[in-house]
Length: 528
Image (cartoon, rainbow, N blue to C red; front, top):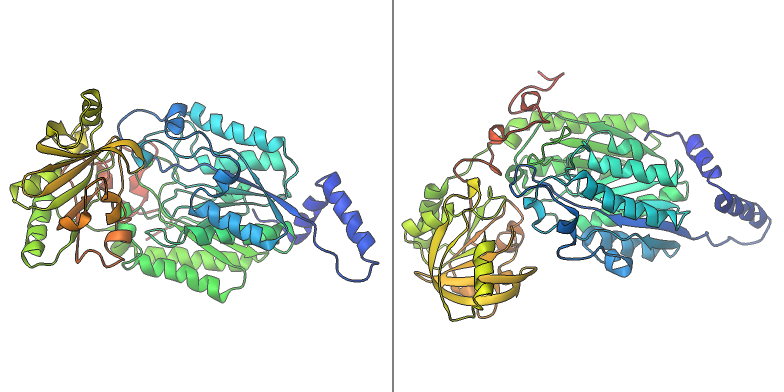
């Protein structure tokens, strides 16, 4: 939203009785001796986050899917939910002149990023509730939205932009709006037509979510005080990448984000946000995006945006093209690492979105690799059977697990001993089964991305007893298995087709995306 300073101040003068009273107070105080304490500000806080895999099976996401694990969060429960919101709330409170107005917000979807399209009814249900709650508490001086960027909704091409538009419609033109995002967001210029700021994580794994929340608080306070007029520029480089290639611990992803940080360090009050995109959402704004915000300097915003856009295009080949070993080759690499004593080995089964794939389990068993912890394999039917029969630790286990979606391969029969059956990994019931040569498999009711070895401390399970850890993760597992120094060897493995979450994006049945306009599958308009 490119507003001039004069227009922005004009907006504020038209904001009604509360601002008129503040203006009169300022006039009266101008004849007094000593500075007056600044009037308090009221910031609305809302959260609506979903990374939507529109190619995943299981049907559309309904209202009850958002309520299965938790009712909407409100009050302090919302303000302490997740790093983005905590960073925003804690920094805003440190200022001493900000009152937070938390709006009841959905906590999250059962199954997370393995869930498909949200229905329009689902989207409107939660958004309407937030807006109605806010309407009863107006006026506010700013709005903070904790979003993701990769939500997909039937008949809503750009959900986050629609959220910003609806909030803007309610609060009016003079109230600054900021949002924080995951770098896997799919956005374009539409969001900043309705909002003033977009703050995106610059690290994957996302160590800086709290920091982005803090930045949003600072920017909103400046804007609400009239000290910052957000002037923006957006660019779409025309590059689409599988998320496994976006790890910021490798080049050129590392350099892209470092370039954004350098611009922010050189130019006062410049904010540079880079979305890498989320290709598993079949939405029209898929792919990389650059958002730049400056304080009333359009020329600077455009200069930074052009530079970032050009740089991403220059490094496109190394950024967007890559491949990983399949199950058999991955088994060979792991076996060699074990033979050399380079354990623990952490294996990222990166392409398994539903979480039920058994490809690596079968390949590792064929290669006779022992002391492997598979965490986790989605197996709701096995868990239901255990509950139905009243199973308990020590019982014999003989069931087929996983393999219930086309991309999951065949269900795999496991014969062993039930070591644990109870609450864990955020679910009411998970199971851990030991089998064969010191192996263990953890069964969950939905896709689970385990980030830390200690998460496997379920009942008697000791992670130190295993040489190999197979997790359903692309990059986030590096947080606890790689970047802490825990694993001596890292292997990222690809799945055989049919493809859902792999690097072979051209195998996906897109309906709203023309891959021919995006590198590496085509040349974007205006590029050579």
